[in-house]
Length: 231
Length: 231
DNA sequence: AACGATTTTACCAAACTGTTACATAAACGT
DNA sequence: ACGTTTATGTAACAGTTTGGTAAAATCGTT
Image 1: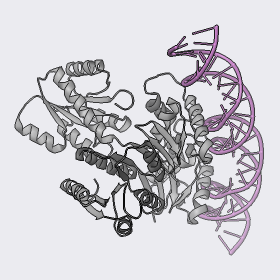
Image 2: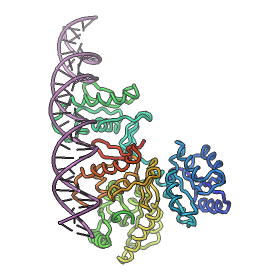
Image 3: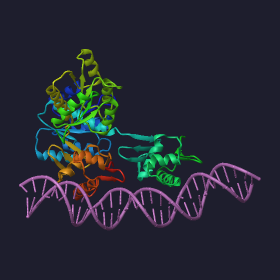
Image 4: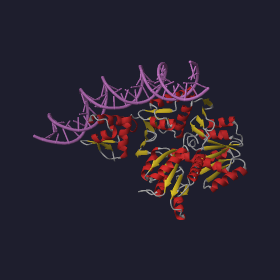
């Protein structure tokens, strides 16, 4: 579960329910924050880094529906999993709830066991989304699973060869690869490719990278090959 | 049981034991994967989505204990239930095993009936943890229980293949799946299906989604596969 | 046999690749 | 310092590969 105890924010106006949830989540080792109104909870959300939200459907003043919509509209909070607690299991409610972006639904009456399971699951999914293989080099990032290369937070479109080329370089930053080595690693089998072709692709890769960052991270080692600048 | 047959990975170096387990689990309809060494199994775990693990205590090279520790250390695999098979029923072993995070213990000699019961139980608990009702991606919603896909509040009719395809994509938004991976996950067993067939179904899925939202959430990664756009 | 769904096929457009040719820059010898 | 030699940068082009998609073939039911 990464670091420390996950923080869970509960929106619930009925004290007995709130107490019940709070107690049980506390026992499981979660840090619980309580909000009795939508407004209160939204304020807390601005202050604290929350890991998961339990949101009662029926709230005074601002409805749970509206709260959810606001949470999901805000870039800071939109990725926090929201579990809606609803008394009525009506189709209509569910559909409207989905539209607001709730991640899960629990219909009252629910067992604590079920609730805890859903909470675990919600936390897991949001954490596992974060777990990716990423290669970094300064502000240059390559997310292998998502197949995305970015400088800062600007995405850079790369063709398959440029992508693989950059990947090889990123796997050993600073190390110099000869053109032959790059042909082996990037082109794998394709037997008859001129070594000069590497130059062309390095050039294309540079062009893409420089279109964003200006500085060129690729170093030419005259007479040997290329590497990422290990400066 | 969600989709298809649960996949069970067996770590067992003794061929006769392996055969016995494999046969009986196969009869019950599980998909069985075999590993004769810890290393082999850990590799399989990186490739395949496994639902449950049977782990022999005594393994050559890497011990079962150490394998278990590694499984539980990895975020991707830590939630897979692990059932340890141990020849000695000593309390000490149990304690050490549970300490590494094994979910259950079976002491040899055991009856097949008992083993199958534990396996069922292990699967049940992990599935109930998984049960998130709703997968969301922007305004795109998939309600697993109701088998409804909607954009905003407009329902979208999907054929079974398109539905599963979308589900696989939604379970790891942004991640790129190769056509082969999609065939494995969506088509499951059907062995000889052309990879290009995936394209056709992606096309249909896109058509349905675009009929409502205009924007196309599916990204084509030339030379690699498809993913949900991780915008 | 007829129907609906799935898979394969075939063709087109778009994207990507490898080569070449020339421009530019670095290293070298005198 | 100078011209020469050698290596690298890069634009352009033709050829190839890849993906989208409609239509035909196949499969599975009824």
